[in-house]
Image 1 (cartoon, rainbow, N blue to C red):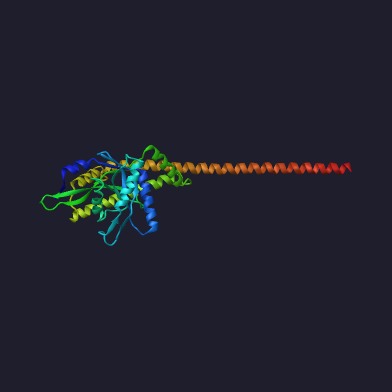
Image 2: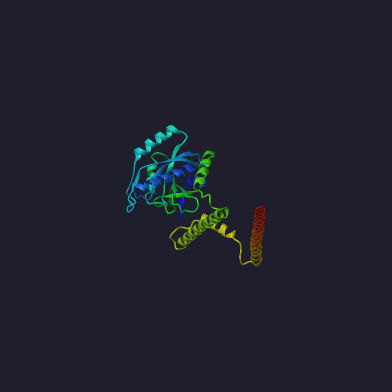
Length: 319
């Protein structure tokens, strides 16, 4: 059995990492520029903000030169002098933003992350590592935050460094919200109807739910096969979630679901009938309007022909 130190767990259990939209845009731009120049699969940068104890506010970031060998995870390069120079310039602009950690675009943990995190300990005692997923097809929150902790084994063997996952959220200040709204207004297709937007949002939500269920299924299989240790807190949360699911074997519950579904389908059926009746009424009304217009045109033509005939007869009599 493996356990972390109680002090670290107590300090990190209630910590929430708040990432601002400006950081997401900067990281996405950094990754796009890096991919356009080289075939690098991930980029690394520094996070700036404030660490208030229970809340880590990630308000800004800047990119740093980073290279690694995809075949050998132990071979990587990071420019220390560049970090110090850029941080000094950012501190002159905004002294409230401190160096609080680093980011990379993952999208998963790498073998060299622990070594890079140890390097950042030269600048900050407790760096936060945030993995920002820049893939456009990603469903859900694209951020995962981690703290490096040391695990102490009960058998007294050597401690092992690992990453502890902490909750993360995306929040924006008032000025950032205005900028994000303008950006989304430019990106959003104005020709898309409201119904299509709602359907696409529900589809994205279902895809996110399917992804989470797949992760849970993979985790439980790994625990059953002995590849991962049993985490009782995760098991308790899964048990609570499963207990909230409805019992579909109950006849009363099934009947209530069926009645509710039938009521909704009845409304859809009546709406379709009403739409068909309105369409037929509009068609008949259109036909009647066209018939009246044609009748009026024919009457006008007859009157014009009669007037012409009378005029011609009067001219002949005058001669």
